Amino acid sequence: MVILRFMSRDDDARFAGRDLRDGAFQKVFLQEAITILRLSFGGTVPRTILSKVPDCTLLRMIDLSNHTKLQDGTAAELFEKLPLLEKVNLRQCLLVGDKSCTAIARTAGTRLKDVNLSFTAVGAKGLTHILAKCPLLEVLKAASIANFVSNRPSCEQDATRPHSQED
Image (cartoon, rainbow, N blue to C red; front, side, top):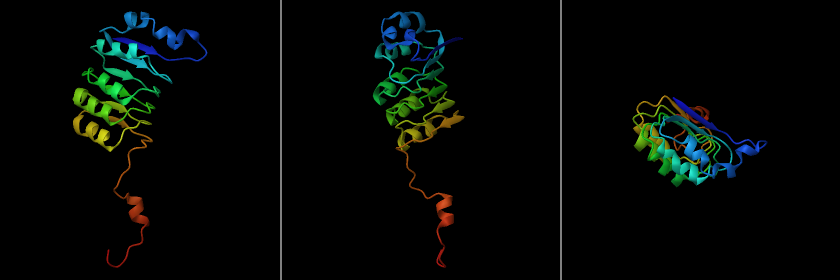
């Protein structure tokens, strides 16, 4: 098993974005044998890095958390090429939404066990795809999803509403 973890550190110039664009990172680290990839940091991962991720054909886990500028379409394209994923962390990928969830469910749905969609732009459609197409799903984290609103009244709402004789 090969694990690659990359996290940005403001106090360490070695992790500046310009170092990611020089090609060395892709050539050395993004290879077929990688099974776990953590590209977790605030801001954005250069497109050159994201374009090489599908070369990691054995990838089982990807962590893109805090990638606040990752576009939904870009993420969806990425997930369409990663059929072996079992764990996906998109926490605080603020622009990732239903298109990515649909791609994850369609491509890796039969293997997916754990997905973190907290603080994303995912809505009811995306959550429905994940729940319907991922039979092995054990963990679904979906805290503070702004686009998800339930139209059904909760038990608490029903309990606080006064009942009339007609109810």
